[in-house]
Image (cartoon, rainbow, N blue to C red; front, top):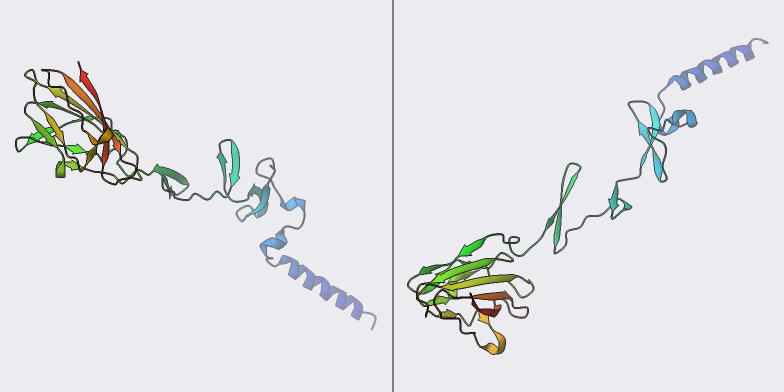
Length: 220
């Protein structure tokens, strides 16, 4: 009868050794600080992250940290707005400016005559669009030859340089349903030979599809 306790103790030891040899959940692997191997010196806000390849815990960051104007922001929420849209490709985040037009103009468009007096090519879908034309006849700018007109909620600007040929004397008429002026009266352009005028326009901020104009006269 005296040997039974020894047999029982031996069995318990074998069971305990078997239990210790079995795989245990990851969370139970964190028994003491010997299971923690920082990959870099810990920083304020670090959390423990389990590395299954190394079978140990190491330090990491909680979520994603982005520096915004010198301040770290954790788990930023990039949301599309009326002026910016966000995109992601893998770990790359891109921001794209939103414009009702197609950006900012860097070239000058030359208007052309069509059907005798109609000027074509006046597309105002691009902010800052610049145009020029040399008058060789009386001219009319309007109707369907003016394209890309904007809503009153969008502010855009444009410039049109009108040059006379050496003969001069030609007139330029603007469509009153598209162009409006101070006191509702369109300015009279210079008719001197080889002289020019520069017209500046911006979108009407109360009326859709209309342009407000001013003129710098007799540019030599």
